[in-house]
Amino acid sequence: MKFWGGEESMSQAVAKLGEEIIEEAKAEAQRRIDKAKEEAEKILAEARAEAERAVEEAKAKAREEAKLAERQRLSEVRRQNALRILEAKNRLISEAFKKAYEKLKSLKVESYAESLVKLLEISIPALGTDSVEIMFNKRDLERQSRLLKGLKVPENIKVNVSKQTIDTIGGFILTSSDGKIRLDQTFEARLEAAERKIKKEISKILFG
View (cartoon, rainbow, N blue to C red):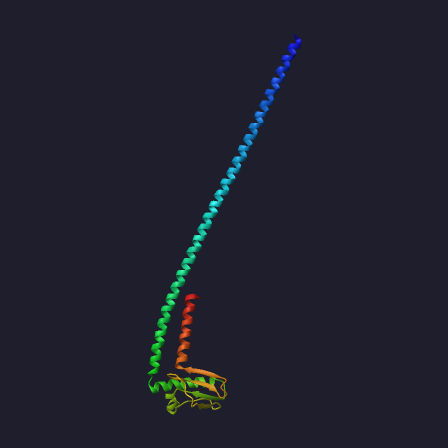
């Protein structure tokens, strides 16, 4: 009986050991499952956070791109408006100078002669030579004595009137005796220079 009882006790011990192993395995499995769940939750939370960051970054980038596009659009609108204003002002300036040109063509002899003499008295010394030649248009060459009456220039400067005429409505061209220095004071040249200057100043105001 003892032997049989011993076998029974051994069987019980083996069964108990098996149960313990199974329980331990279950516990270990549960621990691993819990750990895996925890890690999965952590990974999921990180993924969600990363996704949210990505969404926010995308939104921020989209907002910046939208702002940039709006700034560019407004800049282009302002540029186009400035161009239209410039074109309109340039047209008005050109029209004004055309009117001035027509007025200069119809100047009375007395007014013209007075303006011409004043301009000559400024321009001749400015040429910086001791010998100056004046070129007129055909009409002014024929009436040079009348036009140059009262002209006052420094005594050390010799002034000659060229027989060669120029194509202009008025004014003159000065040259040094050797022809190396030339000063164009025709009405056309002065009007063109003034028009360019005004247009340049307006463009600078509009576009910086």
